[in-house]
Image 1 (spheres, each protein chain N blue to C red):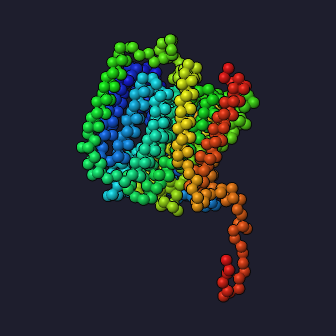
Image 2: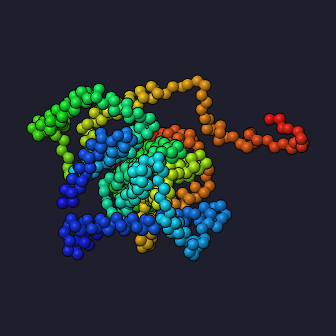
Image 3: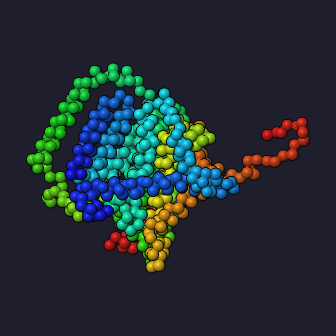
Length: 206
Length: 348
């Protein structure tokens, strides 16, 4: 009973928030609605017993990705009139994207219901998950045994992406002076100040 | 508690619901009282560090000072700047306050005394604490004012930076305990060092990350010496600049609830939570909740001590500490701990 009520609450909030992401005039409001959608999607994950995925969703998307989104969007100076002017021009593209997405959804659900696609190990059929083993252990057991090469490939791709991002953005520009923390810490009052007993009426030479 | 309500003649659903609501109230209301008293305690501590008297007028020894402040704030007018984004401006303190309370759901106060004993308890705390930044960021943006906005930017960058190293530190603990369940982590510390000390912190391999976690938790809650989000010499009062009356008080309460949570987390992860410090039978006669509160208060004393004595970091120093010092060390420590555990056959 409580599960059913929570499901309808979470599901309706996800859909409403997702709609508000599109309809909100202010981009910051859009990002905040997106966060609400993420959070309630995590609630849905908890309901189907995937608590690990739910927590990852909150930590990664709500806790890190959306903060960076918000960070960028808050600093943008967006001209709303210009934004709306582009609407008519982009309508055909938008409709095309929507049609493609709907087609993919229909295909995906159809394929799932037909039961034809078996995402699992070659030959062994679907990956079975026991209900008694905690989520994390089940995922870890699969990830580090059957799928270890896929997992390491994903790690390598992320590493390459990270190195690429650093190479692209990290330029040592000349003429800028960085902080040398150890020299700052080692600096003592004697190095920076001196005590003088200057006669009255004469200036101090610095 | 569910079975207690079931015995009163309720169905399982109704009993579960009532028990959960009762549990939430049992945690949230004493927590509010604890926050009020801890603010008083902290002001007294700072006063002692600075050789002042501190609050001593309202009630005996000034113990009612926080309640007087609360009443004053409650009676003040709520001023909403006309240029602000009204809805978000009011939601921001509510988010801060709510999020600060939510994480307490998985904290065990004694053996088995926990509202929600979930498998991913530690991840839940990490997830909830990563939500805390939204209150600050939204407040800074919705105020539509320069200083709060700077403060929001700083808060977002600071919290993301320190969450990374906190994540790695937690992985070391989880590797050793073998579970994300907080009760399991505490039980894993029973007789951990030399067979009789109940704390991970006395393990030579884990002590350095215990210190790092303490420092990171100060940065995560934006406490001194990392309180750059409300550095009064640079940003007036940071994200709280435009806030008044109850909205301001909610920020205040949320901040201290967060500080208490971080103290509790330190106590749980490294100092044995509700276990007595030493695995010796007579010490178990003292209820676990008393050991737990004693450890929280000890950690809070350290927090107050640091705030009273250490000068504020510069922003670039803060970022350097997070990314160039803590991140490499904690990453190396994950390697070290997992290597040690593999070598000694901990996982076998």
